[in-house]
Image (cartoon, protein in one colour):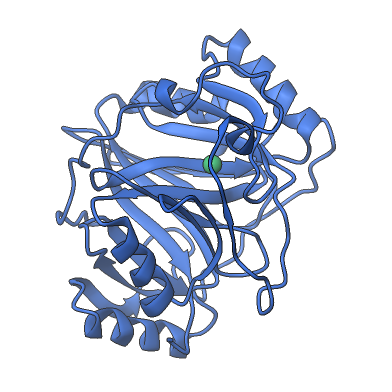
Amino acid sequence: MSHSRVSEIRHVAYGVVDLEVERLFYTETWGLEETAASDGRVWFRTPGHDEPFVVKLRQAAANRVDLIALAAATPADVEALAQQVAASGARLIHGPRALTSPGGGYGFRFFSPDGLPFEISCDVARGPQRELGHWDALPRRISHIVLHSPDHQALVRFFTDVLGFRISDWLGDFMCFLRCNSAHHRIAILPGPPCLNHVAYDVPSVDSMMRGIQRLRDQGTNISWGPGRHTAGNNTFSYFVTPNGFAVEYTADLDTVDDDRHVATVHVPNKQVMDQWGIGTGGPHTMPHPKPDAGLFQPVED
Ligand SMILES: [Fe+2]
């Protein structure tokens, strides 16, 4: 087991074919705030958290994941994690150095064994944040990221043995929920072609999630799956698809666990375990069909 651990999720960067429509979605519909834009790139923050940005969009020839950024506590942790990643055989994009993205910081980049690009950083500047109210249907922060992998057991081992995540729960033998702090999960891994499944955003309450569903529907984005409440993590969910085809989620009520003592359980998959309410529309079959990400092993400069 590694000594230095990832401590949080920071942001996701996407290349998108239609930048302007995706930009409008994230601001007008999803509730993020634009913080900077230049040369076909746009950065967005959540109103409810001090992370300098949570989404970056870039005009691209194909829709793809440009980067998944994670946090570590200290420069020593960043350096130790870079060594752990290199020792695992995963490909480094660059070693620890000063970062040029908004908020700066110190970090390194690498490809996961499947080829998705990652960053681990520390000392990133803090931005403004405000308290969100119970009915504010606005994202507080990124809650979790779900990935597919052609060898999902091997990717789980990469996240636990190399990056220091801990297993919180399994759904059968096919979906693993992983934590890096007291949040029940920040990453989950499913079988499938190497790609992102979805990115979830915490909203302040179930009422906020429901009001958010109303706003999305009023603005022409219907719910793809939900509303419902999962069993692993006990969080509520509602899934949508962005104009360029990426799945996003509003979630609330995610369990907090004792990071050192939580005992992983295996949930036997059935309809009621997937969704304890069972009143929503759609299901996993109405989510975007996973296909290999268009950017595997192709790094993107800031
Ligand atoms: Fe989710």
